[in-house]
Amino acid sequence: MKKALYTFIILLGTYTSQAQNLDDALRFNKKELTGTARSLGMANAFGALGGDLSAISINPAGIAVYRTSEFAFTPSISLNNTKAEFGQHASTDDKYAFPFGQIGFVTTNKPMREKESGIISTHFGFTYNRTADFNKNTKMKLGSGITDTYDNTGHILQANTLLNNMLLDANGNYKQDLRGRAQLAYDSYIIDPLFDGASEYYSQYEDVIDYDDGTSVIYNRNVNGITQQNIIEESGYAGEYGLTFGANVSNVFMIGASLNLSRFKYEQKESFREINRNSFDPTGPEDVSYYDYYSKYNQNGAGFTFKTGIILNLHPLRIGASFHAPTFYRINQEYYEGIESSFVNSRREHAKSDISDYSYNYRTPYRAQGSAALILGKHALLSFDYEMTDHTSAKIEPKSGYNAQLELLNEDIQHMFKTAHNFKAGIEFRPVPYLALRGGAAYFDSPIKKEFVDVEPVKWMATAGIGIRNKNFFFDIAYALKLDEAKYYFDTNEGSKLYGLSFNDPVSLTNRNHQASFTFGWKF
Image 1 (cartoon, rainbow, N blue to C red):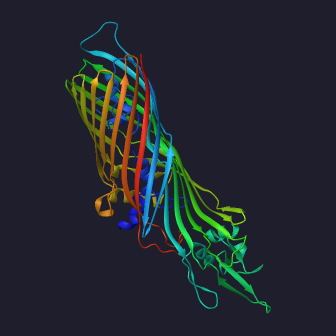
Image 2: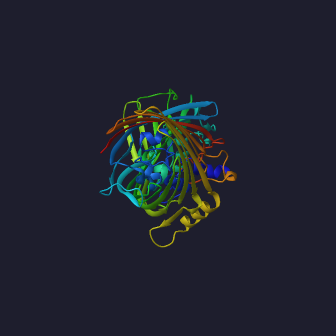
Image 3: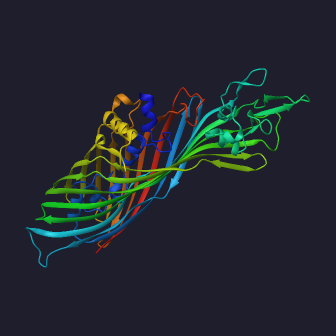
């Protein structure tokens, strides 16, 4: 049970053409530390503080803390490092990305005369905040010197290479009858029939001896063994546009609400690669250098949600609470497979399957947040946020009618998911009025019940930042480090891309994400 589920929870699972799994649910639910550099530098612990363009996405009542109008935007850069360990093999990969953290403005409207009670000010804001970043590359070295076992007649006894497993699929079928991965292998020129009209094939790892009596014998020339790798390339983002309204009542009670449009885009290409590194005897210019058997998975969607919140200002203490309704997504996805082969003479071939597409609806979990902040004059502040996310309330539904597979998936969500408890804390210190130093930390709980996982997929984040501001302009810088670990299990079941191979142990993955954000802002 643990092994089967972990294929889902590390967000690197195997997909079928019109199937959803728990990966999709977790990916849609994902929320990360993003936004303005001030907020990021304090680990987004801004639920009770407000007065920040990302804070109003956490708690809409934060818009009522503003005393002036404001415009700001935040470019950023991120570097994701991944280390994969399998047996005696270790490999690393990385990917840079340049996400746009946020952009937005807030307007503040006050009565003609200053008031001390009643409605002190009203506020309107339009914001965009990046809520998740999916950019990551993972390379797994699985083995080298891998060969197949033959009997003395040239027939395969044990196929340890993926290519010769595809060859076994092809044998017994004429070329016009090939299907699935066998057809892709034939169309990419890494297997060929023994002769025109034959239903028996030989692969690039083999050669054929033709005798004068018209018979042929296949023999293994992959004497030194090929190298196997698995490569996963991920990209995409989730972002949220918000229209926020708020009011300040007597400088004690702040209230706010927002309507939000969410956008989502995710792309994954997973390639199983077999490499010829002086593996063949004899060799020739027509030899395959390497080939990739890949699967490509694309998702995009849009949804809407509603948020509301309050802040109680009991100076020097502020207390905040907010509620985020579920986001109701419409998701479109497509899936296809292919083989790209590259030969020693620089010839390249490519074959791919038809594209399968599917659309469905997804409802994310609701979220409830409580927060507290302590304002220590003009020199320092402390802030703490707690968030409860009920992952069991997520649901996947067909656009219309009934889908038995989605119904089973919803039962898995109810059975295997749980309510997660997330914590964020931040501090800001002002040694002089125009300079601020910041730090923060965050813990994101596992969305999966402990009994269903080998290692709980929790995440830790540490942040730091610095800010400079005067009456009309401010500039903030923040750095965030995200740490998480996972196990990756291969799907080698019948009908899967890797059917016939055997990987008894999982791949251990360690991820380190570094992000730097830069906010430019103006008050008016």
